[in-house]
Picture 1: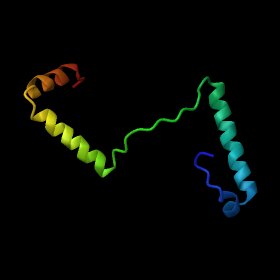
Picture 2 (picture 1 turned 60 degrees about the vertical axis):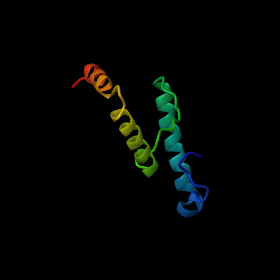
Picture 3 (picture 1 turned 180 degrees about the vertical axis):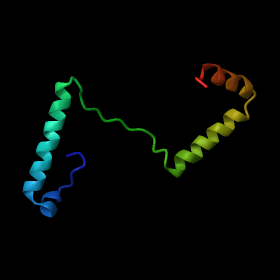
Picture 4 (picture 1 turned 120 degrees about the vertical axis):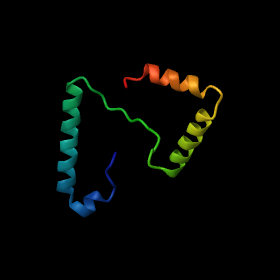
Length: 81
């Protein structure tokens, strides 16, 4: 029941809920027919303050390391810029 709340049928009526489920089911069937399969992945929430703080901490650690110049040279060499 991904993205569907239990009381959705009460709020919108069972007919609407069933129609929505049928559309989603058909959409997923078309994707599977194309050789695709659904997966769920979890990624860091880049909007979270804790993520920003940790990213900043790590970037400061890299920038202040003895190898900072060599590290940046490597990044520049492998970048498409």
